[in-house]
Image 1 (tube, rainbow, N blue to C red):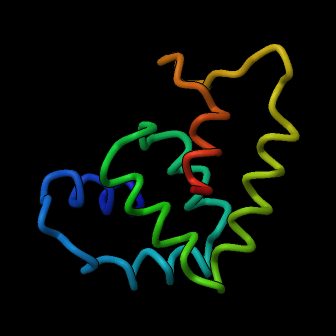
Image 2 (cartoon, rainbow, N blue to C red; image 1 turned 30 degrees about the horizontal axis):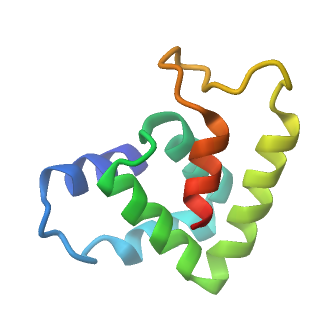
Length: 101
């Protein structure tokens, strides 16, 4: 579902905030699944991904769990590997930090 929201936002530049409520509900119910999907599938700097992170981080009900999950991911990440596991050499720290801005 998260990938479909991202795909729709990528294809529809004037999407505005139509899917914000659905994204927030998904994040409240399945915070780890939503955030891990975003970290794995949404490229850093992508307009749609940035909008999705912004929605998640702007809600008091989702920001705190999201930050805790991101902290856990960064703490568990191998020190000698600063890239995502999908082979595209995207810096995982850049993804996490960009989500907090």
